[in-house]
Amino acid sequence: MKKSSPYVSGTLLLIAVFCFSCSPRLNQESAMQPEIIVTDSLSQKFNLQLDFMKNHFSGLLIARRMAPDDIRLLFTTYFGLSIFDFSLRGDSLHVNSCVEPMRRKKVLKLLERDFKIVFLPSRKVRVKEKTAIFEKRTSGNGLGKAVISLSEYQYGEPARIQIKHPWIRLKIQLDKLNNQ
Image (cartoon, rainbow, N blue to C red; front, side, top):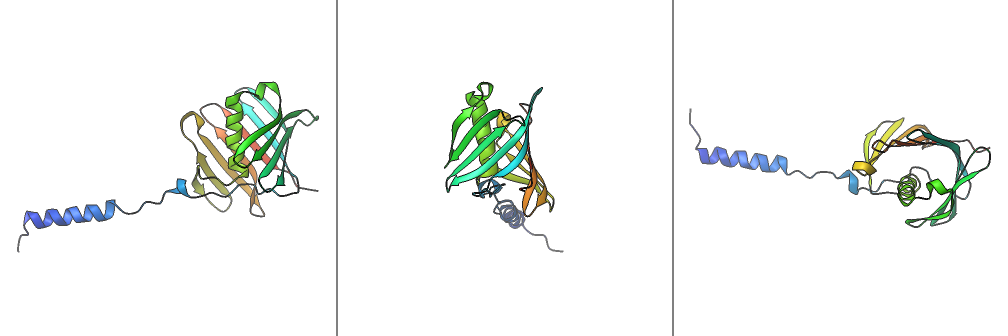
């Protein structure tokens, strides 16, 4: 039995480590994720439940594409009180009206990011799990981390969208209503 020199076996080990450790890695964060809800000129209606710590808001969210780069979002209670009226224009959020407790800059920034993930294509979202009936995505990190769960698919779109911010105890749930 012939022994190989330590130089040859060390070189082979170095080549093997280099080939297998430097394989190209797929970066899911750089891939453009499509919008979760595709809006058109017809209004889409959702039951919206917003839980923040011990506070609970529920009502109706109406989303409609007004122009090619303008999506209008209106959240009202079931009794008709308007909570907010936003416009997603291009990449920015325009506040048409909003109740005073939600007019804080950080709250509006958080809602802007969440609604952009739902209604606009995004590069800042990573798909964690995906099956035929369920999908889990994440966005951000630290205090701004959001976990997006999509389920109950109908006609290629999720009927239930749940956005959780675990560090600040915020949960937003959208349940799609049938247009009749």
